[in-house]
View 1 (cartoon, protein in one colour):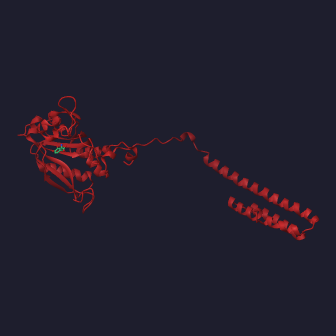
View 2 (view 1 turned 90 degrees about the vertical axis):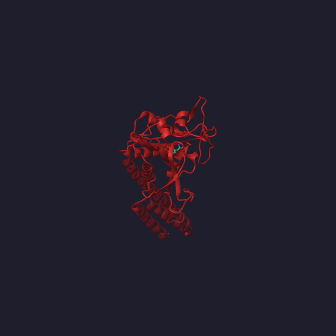
View 3 (view 1 turned 90 degrees about the horizontal axis):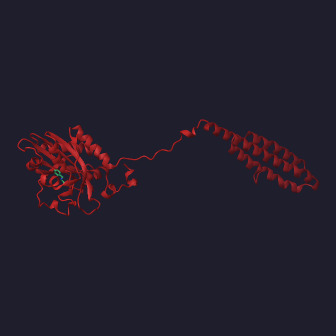
Length: 344
Ligand code: DAH
């Protein structure tokens, strides 16, 4: 009996001391397990009761219960004091929090890839002295075909290729070249301008064709303009646009009714040195049609071909955008899908 009482007394002292010296919730929990756990020190005292007389049990039993209750009470109090400190700390840190200063961030938009590219192109051409012109998308036969030296029996005039409007002699322009004539009528040489815009072709849609796409056209008219001028301009532009100072050009003859001579310009593939899927393993990418403006076109625009000459060029802008951003399907570019546009 004396032995049990001593143990109770020792446990009382050691448990109180352990509780009081706990510095954290973790330490406190370890103390709880040590003393109050199912296999803890207090539980371990219980079997000792069995060996005591009934009389002694009546004394020792309540003492053991008292010890347990006391430790539990102290444990809860200590736990509460930790919680109070934590709460006080949290309140302190929120003391200066201004709820009225908290506003929801507005949804941020992004620029369409076309808009990015329009800016790059107009910045470049303005920097070398070109102006930016505009022209109508619903156009007369004269500006879209006749004035550009495209004869009445030319296949481009076919219903299959052109959207003819219900208004006689009116079409949706099939290229931006119509702006050449409007500008020649409006300005006197020297003229240096580009024009960017939508064009329409009566074509079935697939990954690389749509019935609407964008082109950009350029024109320079002055005295003694030569093919070398257009080639040099294209080289500088493409090197800047595709961010490749080593970009090389390859010039081939090409036929367009509104230029003579006409050329097609390819650029060395900016994405590889030995062939890739973008250049179809040829290391060259077809870029732009160009040439010296045909005398008939200058005449149609009211400019004397004996006195002036000029160059013109026309890009498939949609193709340029797809090339620059690695977009493989034109339908994505024209889809207005926010998921797609968010990337730009
Ligand atoms: N208009 C032509 C097309 O739609 C592109 C073009 C080629 C424009 C040569 C030009 C040029 O100004 O000189 O395919």
